[in-house]
Image (tube, rainbow, N blue to C red; front, side, top):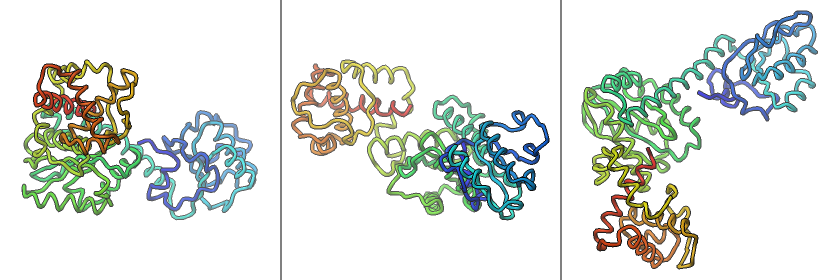
Length: 410
């Protein structure tokens, strides 16, 4: 996990630590924890550059300066020069620091923390290192899930991954993929993973794993009764304070755990992508219609070739994102540069298909008149499918748009 000084306050043992200087440096990275004992004691010559590592958190009691507070400034300057990220001192010898130390730390953006409870250095070091190690485990699981989604993991490897996620899963399993709009960074998802792991009662039969800017929730039960899975998911949402009005989620089928684990992962992932595309709160893989024909073949050469070739007359089209009126404003019939016009045509096609052919809804999402939508669709018909009738064109465009949109998630 990539920790910053700011993140340290979220570690339970450090929740009562107080920042006393260097606020400008709260985003400095922390990669390990070390202790400062006598390295800056006056009269002792030591190779400090080899004793301290850059991007570290330094813990100290300031014992080395007990007879001379001036040594504190020298130590802080030395640590800053060695690219140390932060110093935390325990208030056993000094209950406050000299003003010149505070001034230097503020000027340089070198965070200094103080603590004075019953926290022991070894416990702090263990807790910070665990956060860093858990982050490595999270990154490793992300790579594992990517291999499952790309269908590169063998059944034996999928079994290992499943046990790595939670060796205590029950007989039946379901996956839920969640795109949480309330989480503004991947670090926020990492924190949610930690909160889930702390819920002992729930984590015995469930797990939460980060994947890119989304997360998977794995649910397991001793029976395949759907209401039990729904109750467990509701319990998790409540425990983690997940706001259901701010998420898109995809839900897999319930399968015996002895069967294809990769299947529930892929079903949840793609159902979530469909929910995002169509701006639905939730989609069940069993109910996504024609997408079930496309998704299993999304990596196939034929599908990808079709996706490239059908819209190729539009030229080098830009990926469509935020299609609910994000880019195309009312253009009327005014002349626009060719490539820009073709990007607008592609966006119109995507919005039109995802609006299920509703002209009024399409026009509202694109902030234009529905006659403008008609004109753009006519232009698309002329460019892409000049020899088809209206029904054939709609069918061909529908498939091409869905493949194109799904391909953005590869």
